[in-house]
Length: 450
Ligand code: GLU
Figure 1 (tube, protein in one colour):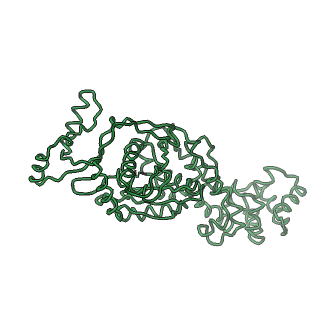
Figure 2: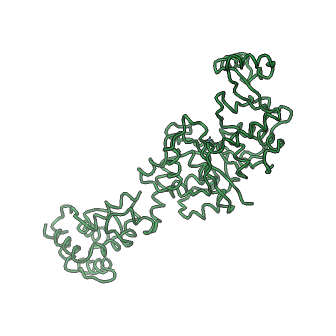
Figure 3: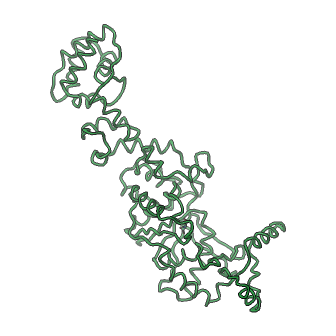
């Protein structure tokens, strides 16, 4: 079945690693089935929503390579919410309330004090017409709650958590609209999921009780013939992402694409990590996106919190960088570095930003260490034996081995030091042709004569 999924961020801040994970999983589910991935901007909160965050969400998703098939905005769909509200009101599923935040808080405290769950007591349902008229006369506008049906338990088969069961009587009737007419999250999201034909709602487990409520909103809208479509989406709730220490960390909540980019983390490394974190599948440096998508399976998700570890990400990043083809990184490489240069240097990088440092070994200038007299004589031999061909390093070391009897470290280390100024680094067989004959000879002679 082709799936239609959505990622529904509120543009009240930047995406953090937890949001990125949800976006990725929804994207993968859609791609895997040849379906559609919708970016839904949940911007009903006009005061806290910012256009700059909408732009940042788009550019972060683009950087991560999570393209979307359509973009929707809740602020453009207010007429639809009004229609749903009217339909639910006509069906007797919405009622006006007048309690202030303070009054509700007092009620909550009293319930808790009595050892009862802090559930809204539905006092507003008992108001008479005269009470309503009196509020109106005072100029007090109501806020609106959705009337949960307590008759039947709410159940669904969760794609990750298995069978879920809620007693609606244990939930508060949710406020769906504020007194100023603005919308809270609960109803618009269900209306959108219906109108956009969402087949699979995949989100964090902090939304589990919202799902219970929303299933009743869906059902009430279906019963009111609000839309032609009448089937519930499938739901799945993933365990939350926690820091290495196993706690919900503040840091994770602010860790986003900018920080990753600054640290030289490739989008492919983030994707490879987040695709499998918290699943029974091994986290591997898979840069091949279609392969990763093909292996995605909700059935492998565990219920335990998924641990995010920066060291895993760094390791994965290095392994991904070692696989990246020249074409993919060309624009970010130092001037003059070609495919052969990239190939030689890539295995030494933890991130692409380090390429310049290593490329300097080719272009110079390099600083050579002090050599012993013996090594200087050896390096003079090396300069004399340097001949150019297909494999100058192989030819040089073979000739020197025969001429001097040196082998192993005694053979290779002074050469590497003289040619690059370093004790370690990229494969000399690949590096020497890049340094070039004249420069290589000059470096060997300089070391010999120092
Ligand atoms: N805007 C909501 C959030 O960011 C969307 C939740 C959902 O996926 O329905 O939590």
